[in-house]
Image (cartoon, rainbow, N blue to C red):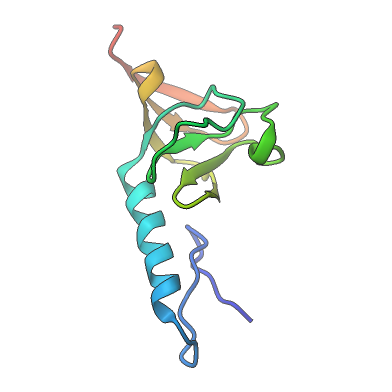
Length: 117
């Protein structure tokens, strides 16, 4: 049975696993994107076509395409979309809003700072 980390849900290495570098590289890329916490947008409902490895989005309600059924997940792109659950306390700079926001759970997001103010 595959074991995962409790917070980021990253695969842990099995002692008898072959190609360990696959899981290690996957975890490093996920960690790289999640620790930086710069989110392109949390308002775009369709997965963007012009995307680069390392781009991060928050999937809003009503999303379509490969984001359908991933509402309120962190969507990270590298060789395809990866999804991670949002947890209370997730702090992110939202680029298209020029805001620092804090995820507070079912009540959504709390604005902490805006460049407009």
